[in-house]
Image (cartoon, rainbow, N blue to C red; front, side, top):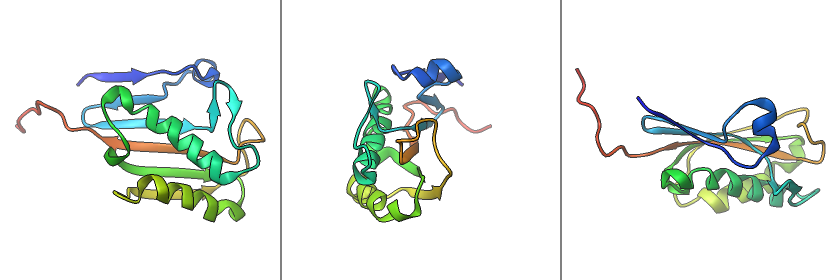
Length: 135
């Protein structure tokens, strides 16, 4: 099986040694993604905007594989405050309502950047053109 990796310009990928997305077989996994664009936090203090920005970044990591939101099987949303559930949920619903994925939402104590209110992960499915026959 071939494993493909996508890297972005996130300084965390180099510093911590991870890829933004990894595809193995028909699965594509997108690592924890924050609401940063060119190193600048999007939607500071706004959990709705941060959720949209984080998912926009995570979905962009699917593009090299020819995938979009409709291929997402699972999302994980990590929040620093329980009070932000409704705002994050609204952003999630707007992005995925047409084909809702399985989803998990967890409240955590914080992130590496204390201004970040949300981080997200994705798991997606890609149709392989040639599947080996089961043996």
